[in-house]
Length: 409
Image (cartoon, rainbow, N blue to C red; front, side, top):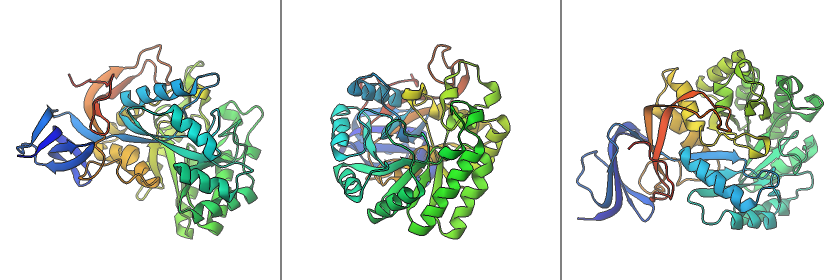
């Protein structure tokens, strides 16, 4: 009988064809079989999760890594640990703010060396600046950038200044020629107040005006574009209308926009550092409506983790999103679609984000009933809140990483 490295069984395996009892067999870091729950599969290590669900590891897009004054390698180690605690097995790092900003191949190599040896899979976005040319983009892609990111305001400050309409169109054309995708922070700099550090100084109209600019440019050029992050629910209709005029536009929101109303934030909450800001409870409810609408253009939900602004959300994104989702009668397949499969597909990580034969064995045990109060001194916006959903154990490329959370014990 063939012996696998590991076999993981669960009565709730979230596979592409639905949630069902199954056993998942792994060899050399890849999934080699997805069989019946009680299939006689021989392995060196076997884990039976029972009713604890088995999810594909989350793929977190546009993750901030570096904080001012922090050693770059240590920043990646911290992000790797937080990712595992949150059920994230693939991190797609933002190009900025960082030192150096990932705006050329040499800078990307610096980050790749700093991130070497992490137990999670690390990928990188290439930064688009006012001076970025076609050779810069091609070199970044050749060096390993899986997609690109630009900003219309201070989304990459101080490393990546706001793009003009002309530069946005030019960069879009060059990215389309590379058959890649552009992630864009779409708040319009001209619509932000001074200083733009409060919700009042970052009104929804800044997102609306930015979306109008992105749609106008993408309509001419035809570039696949992902607005990231998206928070202003009043702009959802504009986002949805892009498809009707032939614009391949989608968006990513974050769990804190879907879970935390501005009215409930404490004066010292880290959530005040979010860019765009956490908005009203009415906006939060409308944002959920937009996310759940048929064929919603809001296709991914990321952590918005940004240590440079004091936003430490990577560990809590899945439980926070699940807590809010269950209140709306949603299921594990929805969670996986937003946090794993769609972000992987967006940036071409075809071996990630799904439990299927041939895919990487990034597996997360997730207890959908486990409740936990976030410690009051936690640096996340969820400090003191009770969340539902326990992560662990985690297998990254078929291995239990050192320090892996094990909440199922």
